[in-house]
Each structure stands twice: as C-alpha cells, then as structure tokens.
Image (cartoon, rainbow, N blue to C red):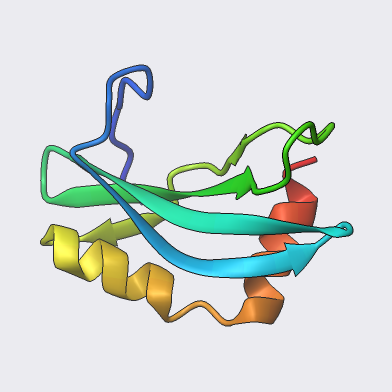
Length: 93
C-alpha cells in the first residue's frame, strides 16, 4: 500500500473536464484534478453543478487516481463509466 501526502489547498497542475452528467435533477460537469506526486501523478474527481442558484455545492472526491503522467490520470478518469460516476457523486453527499 502506498500513501502520499498532498496539500489539496494548492491549485492542481491540470484540471480537465471529462464528461457531463445528469443526476439529482440537474446537470453536473465532471472533471479531474491532477497533481504532481512524489512518484508520479495523482488525481481526484470533482463534480460541479451546472444550474444557477442550485442548492448543491461542488463535490470533490478523494485522491483515487494514480499514474506516471498527467495523461494517464485523465485517461483513467475517462475510462469510468457513467454508472460509476453517478455512484461516486451520490457517495460524496
């Protein structure tokens, strides 16, 4: 098992939108934030509501993506199917 400390208060080196998702009666922009880690790149998913005046806040997942490059992080996020993304969104609150 490998652990890396990461200051998630710093800006990610890359933020890429990977998909749009409809859930909870609104549309969400699904993105991935990529950070340079000690041994490669790490990333996490973010879900941003796309409705003005919505009662939902941005939801940020835990660091779950690992790769040697930024491209690997983004590709891994693209590989997640819509059902899995919806499950992750619901699990975040």
